[in-house]
Image (tube, rainbow, N blue to C red):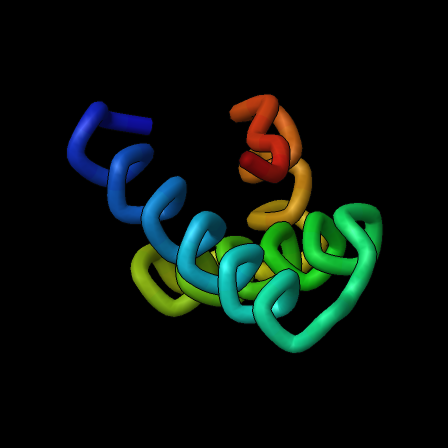
Length: 65
């Protein structure tokens, strides 16, 4: 994955986590929502299946602020 794509995925993750935390969700729930959103974004970018996209996103080591 190139640096630009990784940055866009991290941004999608961060935005979703911030939204979830803003709605009062725990950091664990916010993290899961962020991973899901980022994986969906990646899958839409490169046409990969959801499982493959999730594995790639989890491999980035993203975590809540």
